[in-house]
Amino acid sequence: MRIAIIGGGLAGLTAAAYLSDHSDTSGTVFERSPQLGGRAFTYEKSGFTLNYGAHAVYGIDRHTLHSMEEELHLKFQSKQVDKRKVVYAKHGHLTPAPLDFVNIMKTDVLTAREKVRFVAEIAAVIGNIHHLKQHRTLGDYLNHSHASAEVKELWEHLVCSNFFITPEEARKVSGEVIAEYYHNLFLSGRPVSYILGSWATITDQLIDKIGDNEAWDIAVKEPVESITMEDGKFVLNTKTRQQLVYDQVIFAMPVQQVTKLLEDTPWASTMEPYKNNTSTEVLVYDVGFSKVVARPFHYISDMDHKIFISDVSATDYTVAPVHGQLLQGIAYLNDDFTDEEQKKQYLELKTQQMEALFDKYYPDWREFVEVKRVSKKAMVASVKNIHTNKLLPNRLAGVPFFFCGDGCEGKGELAERAFSSGRAVAQSILEQAQTKALTI
Image (cartoon, rainbow, N blue to C red; front, side, top):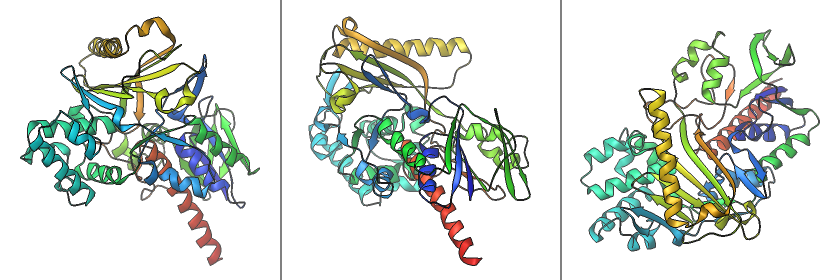
């Protein structure tokens, strides 16, 4: 069975690693960029390791990576963020972030009565009986809730932080999605961890796994430009090659790119509902210092401005030189602007707010900057997980392809959805091939 995988990000590499583990498969991973990994691309500069996609993993002990580690024999280490050094800033006041029961008791964002209410809500989520999952959106739930304004604000802020979106968008996330996400996270013994060595630790092993099967190859800087079906086979044309024939095709790229590639094909109308999906974009401010400037905490979330700063090197020592420090700031962004000038001014304001946060908690940081990278519109997820968007199923009726990626249906959010959907698609194809072989 010859398989084409279009997209060399986390999902495409995962699917290829599982498929290439079987000797009766062959195929090609097509990636239009010069490098693999997609938004999980990692590169080094002046001794610092910078990630286009944050390599934090939520609930790693219950994560798809845990299954992949065993099934694909991956080897990696991770380190948990120190929850005692995670803080919220509200109106200039610092307080422990309510990430577990100990911190909930210590935090100042809730009163004693509100803490009891919030602990009861967490217990209901863990028990999978919380009313949130019965509501269309978080906003609907909060509108019907009798909780205080502070408890409602905390729910919004938690969803902002984990889904990388603004409070307005947080209220549009499905109640069922949030309930399932926090059910998994609250049961985790390791809620937030970093992969030591960044995403490259995972992607390099997946690439090596694919390379172990000589019948598989990876083509970078080779975008697929068209696809047709002839006599039950898929015929692909790329930027450099024509009439490439495959038995099966997996799309492992952003949904918006899939719909564009298929817009002049018989399958365009079926893809129409996914055409206008919006993506999650943030402002990312990476800065590496020649020395440890300050380490008052490992993570600070500014509740007033909806920005946060992670001291990545405090958890992952591999990302900075000895005695150096790497911080990553993230600002959640609105995407509703009347014109480009308004958008430009808004992004400049967010940049100023981020630098003000650096100024306040990392004094004199500007004097020790070795590396700086500011991405004012960095994509976190190809499909923002709000109820007005539709995640793409792994299979669509009337469409002969498979789909995987963070914009597709799968377990978890962000990178986990890429891993889980890539794994599910590969397993489905292998099961179909086995069933077909048994009937012959």
